[in-house]
View 1 (cartoon, rainbow, N blue to C red):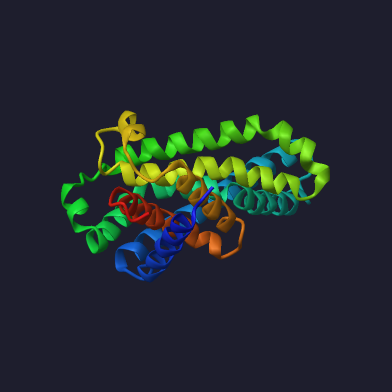
View 2 (cartoon, rainbow, N blue to C red):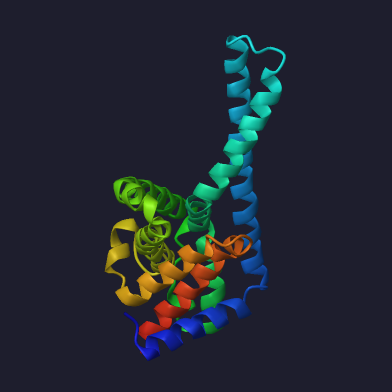
Length: 238
């Protein structure tokens, strides 16, 4: 899928992205993504608590209902965080991605940075919602495949990675393209990284989302890598 040159470009993009991880602009976005993601799951947990507490009261569980609601709400928040963190984090990342891409372009690709037009938060929100819609739809369509592979042990994880690699590769590519095209409808016309690179980037990012703590860094590192791969491809370096 990737030649040796492409693999070298991927490694170079990763190293450059890690080298810029402690830039103020990058750290600001990282903080926003992590805190807002946690806040959304906390709100979900609080909402689940009040909803379940009312439900248990209707059932007559006045004495033990509060404790049961709290325990159930905590489980809902935790499991939702595990299952949906990638979707929520990419949604939030889409809104603030321009700050990451701009920081990378200004440092490494100043000519591209000069020509870029910040897409604004409204376009980022639309991209984020589109990303959530695609993630839910494609994983729902793949649910029968997941079910069939459930008894293979590792089959579900492989299928999940492949499906989400395609989705996440597109999301990360769009974050870069948004600065260089006019509107969402033109994102597909942007000549960025090749399909193979986009898929492998999505695969690496999807795998990173499965690793505790590393998953917190996956959105910003993925966006930075997408920026490097895009501009190095356009310059004939990848």
